[in-house]
Length: 267
Image (tube, rainbow, N blue to C red; front, top):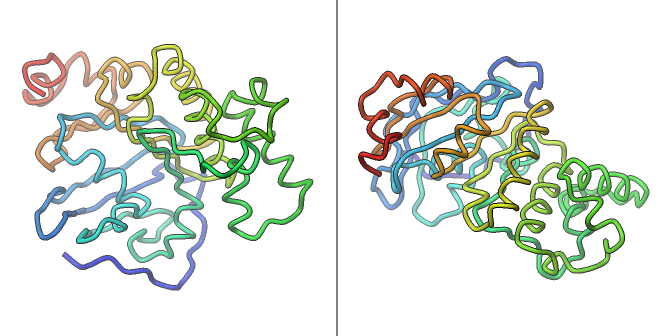
């Protein structure tokens, strides 16, 4: 597998009209020479929520991190294959351009600790050279509204982002990702550290925003996958075992290993 690199060229935006938002072909990835993903093939449909499930260590997080090249920031990481976005292989794209189109929210909320709520949301725009204060303020409000957080923070936008509750911080991170208008939003177990009420708010948010962008969520929670996703991927030991409609997979899976995992026989 080839080592990761940072090519200087830019790439066109991902087509929002494509029926397939992400096409993964023969994706292999690992750390320090140890394989984690073993030739994964997957097509993620646009404007849907796709859940990735599987036992710990099966490669779920590695797969989702490869989609916007966060995988490569880990020392010793390697990745090979194709991740096609708008006809371009993400592994050959400028990571900065790619991450404007493919946003990511992590397992634990990670607001920038020295920034206010408003500054957190606007951070990506400022990084990309936007200086128009009116545009920044408009985008902050719009993004916080899309993240269902505006009504809770509109009177304290200058307060530290870290002053919010855990669930609010996670929605703040989603607002930050949405502010740069990505085509795809990746979420790596975004509710695992949240209480049931905050989890419900995040799930409701995902169902709302999927009308305008493609969502891929890694989750260990079978009930959550069933509630929020239209398609589900089941992974095991670095391989994609089954991929299809969530309602079908959870009622009549095609592979016995999928059935055993979903019914709790292992995992």
